[in-house]
Length: 413
Image (cartoon, rainbow, N blue to C red; front, side, top):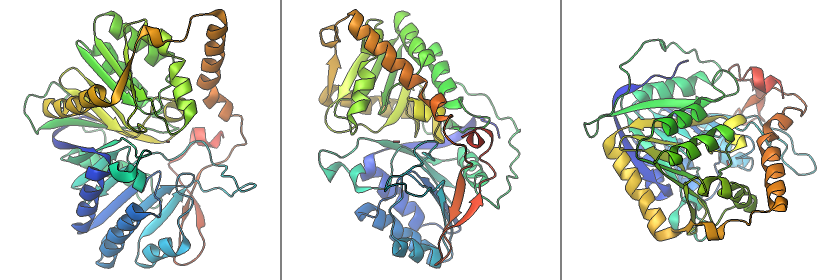
């Protein structure tokens, strides 16, 4: 499969579950033929039950539905909850479910972290929002700030072909080699060019990272990156520093109230390097930041599931949409500027850790440990990730996912 730019798309930014869930549920309610849904987390709470209800209704009226959940992220759905769907004809699978060891989940790495929905091949959703009540802004202090996009246009077929090709029993008949017009700055509102990119453990291990690097090297005026779990490698850090040094306004929004404290510790190890190079860092304090978005100048943007950390860049299965469109870029910029103005604390040099041999040594050791963490995971006992299909009403039947290959054999967020 190849990454190809597609012309003539309409892309809508969806902020938090408040905008995302009604759009997805309405699309499923209006579905006529097929729904594909992949997600990392699906909880059996109010939001999860709403998703369950619309899928069940669609299945009962004859819509073909295929669901793929991550075995680590969604381990606790009840048998009754799942069996109602499978009894109605929903094809329900878990990615790499593993048995508990002393009550603990063991499938910690190489997670299926994508969040994709495709309805009738005509509308798709790509982003970072999971199906849980904590994605709603009224959830409380732990509500997550997050983003997704609603996609209409030719790129929906690319998303569909990719999602269906990862499921057993489906052949990819799409002629991916057909070339479309190259991307250029789009001046017509609503006619966005879009590129669907993904990260796997086979031929597309660094695709998402490469597009971030390309964006930073081509930026002329402004870059804004909002990323929940920020701990990239040398290449991305150098690219951000180099962009700032040549006069680009580089702004980074990270978690100030993280859902996992280690996230803040890791990001702050990089502050000295980035701030002293001219990168402006903003800590988001209203609630946990879960978004994975970025923009460049007046036309480039990306929204997806990939964090800029070792798990997303080196281990997890991820998916992002890259968008060339002034209107979408303006919308995302206004949103992120609002976060920085109202809910972020800017980091200045007075807030940086003191420069000492002790602090330098700690930072170097921690950085190298975290950066080499994916390689250390490769030392773990090898296994081939499976897809477990839930058969109504029996226990899961294991079947190998043909598309998960080489790197997995060597073996969120």
